[in-house]
Length: 164
Image (cartoon, rainbow, N blue to C red; front, top):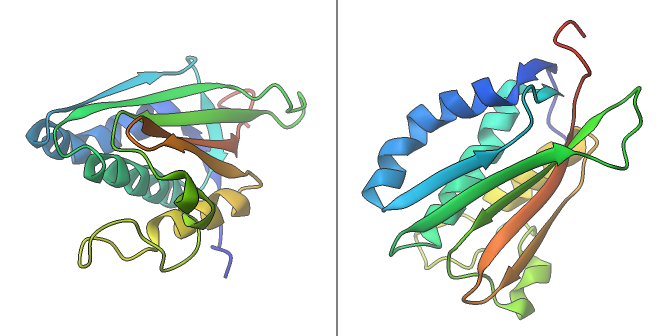
């Protein structure tokens, strides 16, 4: 079932700053550093609560993949395939974790599929992320190599000015 959208104009920097207040204690506890590279301003036209869910799910997955610590890097750029009338942003969230075995990559977005030990994951996080991104007109895919970390790539709608 597609999530119902309540889209609004939203600054990525403000969203990430709010989220960092939530996840900074967890990242510090696990010796994980978060970095972001994004244009300023990076203005989205999205459902805020659903964006929070996307980033919390992705960061939680990254934390679980890095029990010995590591790095999470968020890179954002203007999507080169978008039109001026409907700008889009391309996101790449990369971790330095354990990666996903190649034979499992095709299954990661399936509901109830998890690579985590029993009791550690529901198998819903990435399925929910995919549905939210698709509801916003975007697509998502994962690049990963076992032992080399994981990158989640996705697009989201933007606006040209804050007054949109």
